[in-house]
Amino acid sequence: MLVYTDSPGERIGLIDITDPKTPKPAGTVALGGEPTSTVVANGFALVGVVTSKSKSEPSGHLAIVDLATKAVKATCDLAGQPDSLAKSPDGTFLAIAIENERDEEINDGALPQLPGGNLTSFAIRADGSVDCASKTVIDVTGLAEIAPTDPEPEFVDINDKNQVVLTLQENNHIVIADLATGKVVKHFPAGTVDLDGIDVKKDGVIDLSGKTGEGRPRAGRRAVDRRHPLLHRQRGRLEGRLARLLDLQRRRDARI
Image (cartoon, rainbow, N blue to C red; front, side, top):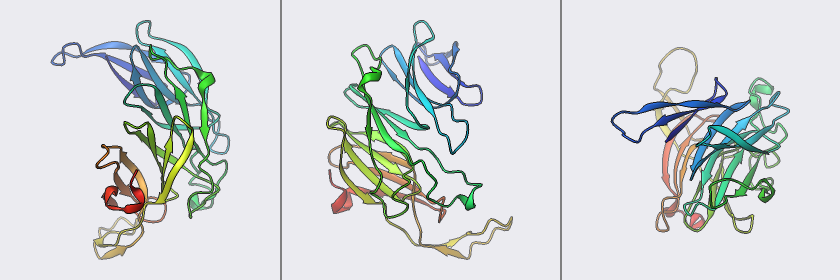
C-alpha cells in the first residue's frame, strides 16, 4: 500500500501497488486537519496533522490510521505544528519535527517569533501503532546562535543507532539527539558558503551578477550510515537563497 498526503483535502490517499505496473486507487481517510508528512509502520499510517488557528497559536496531532479499516484509530496531541516525520530503522521510534513556523508577514518574517519548536518522539508498538503516553519532548532552545529562543525544526531522519538528526532551518543549525534517552548529544551550525554569478534580487529580472555568502538548512538531511552519517542539502530562505550539498562526515564536529 502506498500512502500519500493530500494537504488541501485534509486527508491521506491510499494506492494499491500490489502490482506496481497497475496501481489502483484504494480510498482516502479524512484527518480533520492538514497532513504534512507520513510514515507507514506495519499496518498503520502515522500522520502529522496541523490544526493551527494561526501561526501564533500552533497546534496539531499525530493521527494513527489503521490501513486495514481505513479509519483513524487514535490521535496524540502534539501541542504544536508538526512538519516532517521519521521512523527508526528498527521500527521502535517515531520522531517528529515540531516547527511552529514564523509568520512571514510579521516584521518581514524576522526571528524570534514565539512559540519556538521542538523535537517530539514516540515509541512504536510491535503492531505499528503508537502509545501516546510514550511522548517525549526534546528541548532544542538555546542551541543555535541565530534566534536561540525560537528554534524552527524542519526535517528529521534517524540512523541505525536510534540517533535522530534534526535541522533547524531558520536557525542555520543541526541537532543530533538520542531517542532512547531523549537527550541532545551534539549540535553545531550548518555553516555558510560563498556563491558568485547568481540572481539575488526578486525584481522580475534575471541578473546573474550577484553574490552571497549566507547559507542555511532547508530540506535535506539523511542519516546515511555510520561511515557517512549525515548528507545535507542546504538552501537559503531567511537570509540567503542557495543550494548546497554537504557530507558532514568531513566536519570533525559532526562525527557521531
